[in-house]
Length: 490
Image (cartoon, rainbow, N blue to C red; front, side):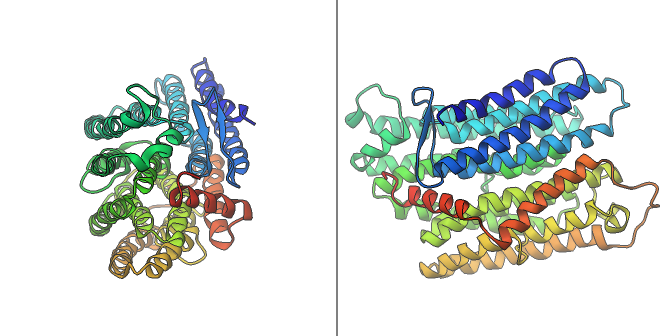
């Protein structure tokens, strides 16, 4: 099965090359098929490592364990949904001048973006991990600016400046970790995860602490932790809807995955308590700021962007609480948030195509005028708020229960308060958009494509399925991923 990681990474590259060929039809077919095949291979890889096995390829340069497989699944799901959705999303501009060139460029970049994010959980060392995360920045910045409006170009430029600064700090964290390992591993070595973890117990505690803080600040810039989040609302709101879905549900999680690799080192070095406190601090600050910003939004894509910051804070708190149940809930939240936020941003894209506005007050009666999009967008909003029977409810419940079991009463109380503040904001805005009295004629607004509906339905199925029942294989995967964080040397 060692060929599977190579095959997975080859799929989006082939799709990107096919997208550049002459013809919009080939580009859209390559993107949709590439995403679906990547999802199938991601599931196959996750099943392979679900019970604790580690898979390696290319002489050890590619590596996948149960922890990486959780993030691989999130990326595969959103890459497939974005590929299918993009067919209908781009059709609305099919008659515009230069459409064929734009569509091929968009599809090629979308596939490259999928490739960079699939690469992140497949890396085997800290250096390659940093390069992979940097590549996600470069490609996604081009996608944010692809519409070439003044707002999109400004958002892209802001994103590049802030994210690159953050990744510079992240690189420094790797240098610190590398330097403190030279006495055990020699003056020149490849900082493979397994090798570093095998010797991390002998590392300088101060150096490990410094490296972890730098990693949280550096990679946390891409995660969207407050106060390094300022690029995120602009980039998510200006990017095309399928790109926004991948940014929110996958890109942020990919950067969080990098932090968890440093967390493993901190655990082995005896600094678990310190690392957990750092994550709790950033999680609480992010929850606080995001929940308050949600209340005052007038742009529904920016509303969803701040919701993403909130959910990254929830995951940070889950890991920071330290209880096995809470950590397992945080890992499950990576998947539930990806599916729910993917549905929400795809729904936002469909609403944008129907109403031609991003302003919340100008969207009314979406439930009646868009009979598929309206209810599914509202379902996504309710799921993001933790409505029972949604996957987000299950994962957040596990985090709260684990926090109580660990005696983290203050942290849990803050989580509940801020999540409920965000709940009222999201439900209030989404409810007015979907259930409010229609202010436009039915002929002006409507569903634009069956591909849009199909992609949203796919995400909705995952949202509900994870709330009703977590399959046994996924339970095993999450359990073994949890063990990777509790006992990193196993």
